[in-house]
Length: 318
Ligand code: ADP
Image 1 (cartoon, rainbow, N blue to C red):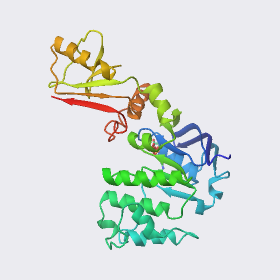
Image 2 (image 1 turned 90 degrees about the vertical axis):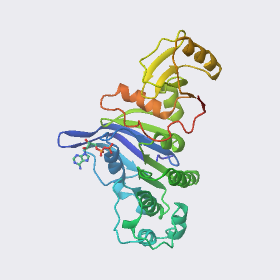
Image 3 (image 1 turned 135 degrees about the vertical axis):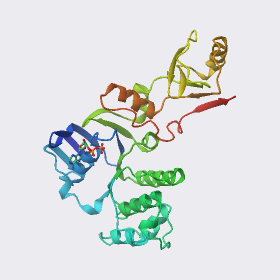
Image 4 (image 1 turned 180 degrees about the horizontal axis):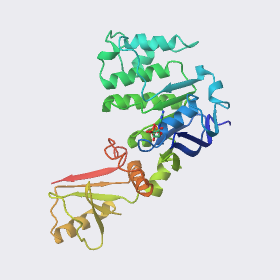
């Protein structure tokens, strides 16, 4: 089957800045493909090249089997990061405007309901919350029922419930065969939605794989996080590998069966603690580990919400 989206050794510079420095990737039809990486990694430039809004200096891009500029716009949806509709439009007017650009677009009211907005609300775009604005923009990008949908940080500023509602919308689109190229800083979002993830850093693909592959390869071991009252330096707990991190003391490679043994060892070592939480590695752990390996990638994913939300996790509070 022809891939929906292809980049072959794509290079693009702005003056002395190499925004893309030899990027190759291929997205299969029906796949959800996440692009992650720190600010300035080249994600937006790549999306612009893939959608034909910027031209690569070198290399080749293909969208739906041809040059991006030749792709039937009915079949492509794009939500740019900086999409900024007119202030004095209601969500219905905005989405209806975009629906009017296409033959056979979907019903704007139905799309608005899907993203969790009331189609009858007369509120101007300018008076909506950041999350509602983003949801209205997502609705505008979906209204032509595209075969390939590019979403550049679709859930930025959207509250947790709204974010989950949008995830369900994207999951339904993916289930119906829509190809989705998703740019995100939210590793829980990438882990939940993406079939494959590419980490971009300094204009290059540093790693590609399914979330499971990246976590298995780079995420490290199961861990027990020990929240101590004072920021402790690393302590010596015989038989275990303990590291002092931002999260607290992290005891690596601990199975749930070992927790009692760790607690006893901590008590023997005189280490008091407020709480213990056990978790499996996540995509955020893999991202941060890869970040450590790639100069210029650091801490961007730290603070991405809900990193461990999709993983088995146990917690004990004192
Ligand atoms: P990301 O989306 O990953 O944050 P970008 O693709 O926006 O990365 O940017 C990659 C690099 O290219 C950055 O160093 C950025 O400053 C630079 N860049 C992007 N667009 C332009 C532009 N229009 N003019 C000059 N430099 C740009």
